[in-house]
Length: 417
Image (cartoon, rainbow, N blue to C red; front, side, top):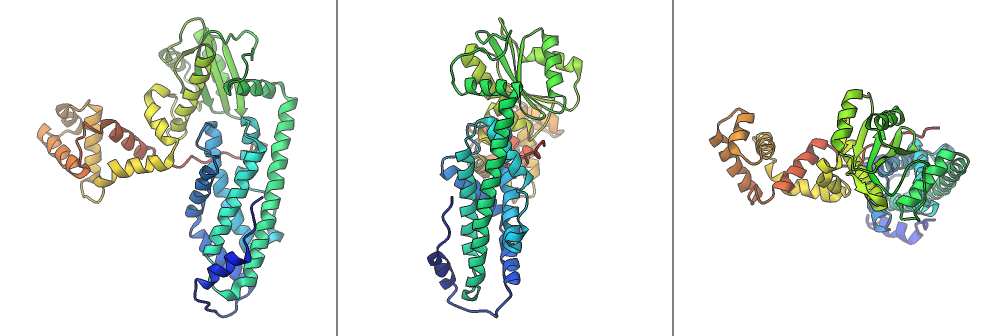
């Protein structure tokens, strides 16, 4: 459990304002004013919470299921709002914890994330919010009100931990009762490097495998139809409603082009597939799933019928670290900002890179002459301080990141209960 803010911390923050006193305000008004100031810093608080997760070694963007990673940011956002509401309205307001936090407790249980890890993240988020409260202390006359705020936050943490633990354990109990979830647990253990074991009668692990993750209300039916059309054994498990992990097996490698042909013929609606690269044996079975998970990081931001890992490998790798992704865009795209032709420069770069760095082909796509493209490229290289050819891959990734929009993980969905 997070340590309570000491009186020394409060006194130090108050003294920073020169010991000034304002007119006495009611506790309710003081709480409302504090909550209002904190709401103007909500995005900063959310980013600080995620940074604290990384500091304590539990980075939600590393080594966990893509949907769980997406849910982390949504849970943090709703929980910060919930905490600010508690600051403003007091303990009597406590009710059900945010739906995104409940959904994340379910995902944690299904993804094998330990309860200790979940609760340590909760405590870390609580500590960050306390730190921001201390930063917003205005006057020594509010010290009594602030003691009440810290008491509220302490009670909120206890309430939050109790509810998260309850939902987590309930999901574990449910998993123990359902055959499908027991099979999911066997798959998870095998993915984590557990001993080789049969996970599904008729599906051989000593074979070739193509990993797929399907998202959508008809994900399971789409995968079954694909397996029939491909004539391949299917292993599938559902870590949560609307998401299915699957492998197409066989004694021969399966090219993604074959999946695309069958998928085009069937034309399923509302289902998005993320696909790895075919791999052999148990190691290939694990790696192709990890590739599908990486492709899903892109698919969640740019939904389409099929996202191939081979097409988005660099982009997916960068998306695992939003800070590095932002710095990549700052290095290669920010120099193009602040100019009236910033959009023209980006369009020229996209056309030039898509044309294999051939100015004449880019000129045809842009409907300008080749010399115009060459002049624009010279200006771009001058702003970047480097040749386009030297940083071609970086520019392509930066431009694609910009096309995806917000770098933060997409919102998680609500709990399925």
